[in-house]
Length: 455
Image 1 (spheres, rainbow, N blue to C red):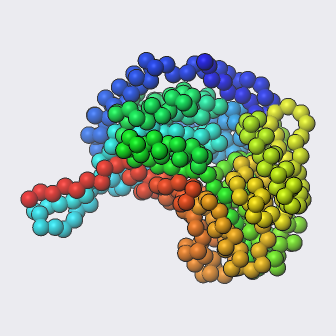
Image 2 (cartoon, rainbow, N blue to C red; image 1 turned 180 degrees about the vertical axis):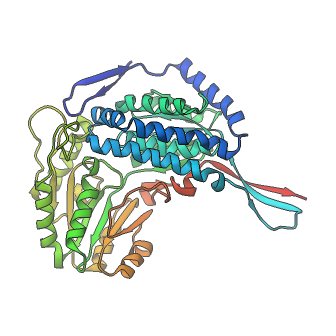
Image 3 (cartoon, rainbow, N blue to C red; image 1 turned 135 degrees about the vertical axis):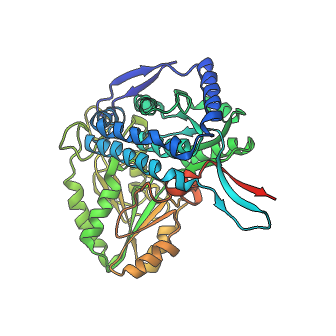
């Protein structure tokens, strides 16, 4: 049965794609495994060299790639261009850092010589989402391939056009054909693929539900997996915070990609001394946002990527209001084509409401009042998730201590919204997953940390 991509701004079907057949899947596994046998033996610098060309292609065609993202998942064109350029930055980073990051490390023992070597594992499966269709795939594949592995990528069906464009970038950049192969698969075919003996690891970016399913299947097959899952990231605003800065950063962190980000600033935990002023400023800024055609220059917010995702978001908003949240702005389904949802602000949110307990994937800002700093930190950590967290305060030393020691998350930011950076490890704790992408940790995510001993 063909897989279809739909324009979320109009609801119109864009294209249909044939699913990868059983014979094609087998051929992809054979090619990936065979390529790995030679690819792993190359020097790290040689394996990473084509990444420089990939970066050039991404920059040269950023406009076209941005347009493709706008059409398939509704990302505003300027954000899609920026995503392609960020992928280029990542490729350049690993092209420059792969040799040093994978170099053997001598260890003094009773041997004549001993050291730790970082050797690739083999064929790695990447299961990638739709919300950052280029970034997520490059974030997984570039370091995995640079480390000497080969990859198969099962992308989200709704962004199959992006998936095929990414595969073409790797091919044009000069990587052997078996290094990167896209698979057009429905989800029920992924489980048996994980169990295939030629597959040596799995990386998933997706929901916590999907993470549990993949972890169970990979664990049963005794294969390592890296899980970057959901988040309900808190932004703690203390009484001494620069409110103009805090509102600016919280707005940017919440509304980027129409709020469809695992590390979006999803809960604004604001101490009572400044909560009214914070709410007023944030409401004014949200009212100024313009939703519209993602290809139009003036659009701040594109649509939600799929009709079912919008329906679930609206359910969460309605149930939160019914449970006592105050709807300050938005929260109503707009008329007209496409899957648009208005910039929405909910205040006086408390435990038991979906806006407090669940991940909201869309342009919905949530304010949770706190009596003081101690209660704000308790609320910030009162979640099953632990991906990113931010704190806003004029006391930088205190902010650093909070971000480092007190916020239960894989990343702690002070006076800025949480974002990913090729140079820093990225990942979460609790139900946000395990393992780290990006930085040196990402380069070594799928390697055999091997002890070598010469008597």
